[in-house]
Length: 418
Image 1 (cartoon, rainbow, N blue to C red):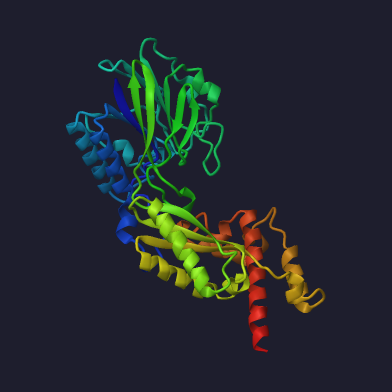
Image 2: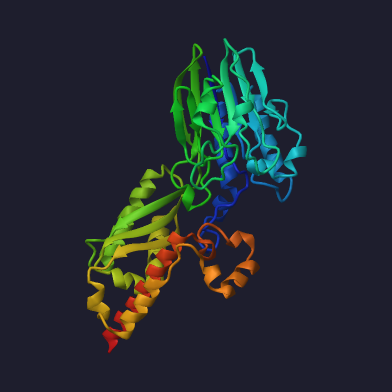
């Protein structure tokens, strides 16, 4: 019997995006989240007395600002060495893009596989053979799996590969291969990396994406961790997912259909936040609040959005251990649009003009050259997945709806004063 841990996509010292601009943001948690999650990984390996650790690519996050990132990694590997645990690592696209990592001396208990061709490493005492290949650069478009050797008979065979398989949403299609490509090698376990969401691709043979160990933005919400695998008599006896993240990103959906007063909205939001915190198992939450439902206060929410947002931040601060990344309005009005603006008025014509804008094939920077010039002057770190200038057509269509609601809110606000 032996046990091992399969982890991937560590992205050491990668920042958490979306919280930095808030004064009450958990600065220490943000800056050190990936390191603390990695410490949790090493703690798990030692506590479970595993025989070895597999890291299926993207240990780092590209080039480092200095050598402290590498020194931190080697110290953690030293902890494994003292516990008699070996580590087997391949470079992924982020590692392959780094110049510094290629010259980093590694501890003796660490095996880093070559990028030249697939290599096989035998653990005679366990009767295990590990087959793997690293990335030579940040972009690998060929099918690496096709060149992996066939299984070695009589041993438990493991393949490590950083790949998108046949493609996964939100991930570059690196080292593409099919399920049949992997099955054809005859291995008992495939330790995959690159996809940041945990997925058991196949159970026979076992082919697994463990996901990353720490979410870095709202698109990486939910539990993050690694896979603990137990093998008995040459067969997988158990596979167990273990949480390792230290800050958890969550999408908190709150239905406001029954809320007719401001106090009712606050109570509904407070209850939802409390529930999410209880599910987080004693770790801080980075939360996006999504308000839904056929809400009586729909227009009021849009008209006084900043007021509501600050109120929700106050609720989160009072609860503690919750930091609000963003408030997203997805409610619907109860009153028909014709009742608000009429059918043949200047305001209805303005809304029709907004509706006529077509973002299906173009973005804002193509429609307005001034925005294109602005984009060229912005630093790359501002052009993230939530940036309007970088948004896909669907996001721009949603922005169009928000503009309409803002105009309607203003109309009703000023109409109530006249």
